Length: 133
Image (cartoon, rainbow, N blue to C red):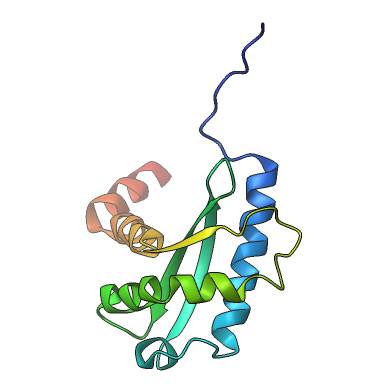
């Protein structure tokens, strides 16, 4: 019996379903269906949704805009995750199982800023200028 090589890269199906879940969560939040003061008062950007291989867990990476403490908004989203999951039904009716939704803080923007700061640092600028000569 042949075994398939295991890969940590998401499959096309996982990517496609993740994008559908991201769009559905975005619609629920935009329509203001979640009755939570913290969520209603915050603009929330969902950058990515990663699906588990069995498509039963959806991890949504969110960035609350204009808020210094992201953990408060993430906690509010996780408190309302079951309600949000219930509201995803009409958009995701083709799925066999409705995925459990988990919210995590998206730190990719912080990583991009660190890289940008490094590239703009005097040491790197000096090295790049010397290469041009």
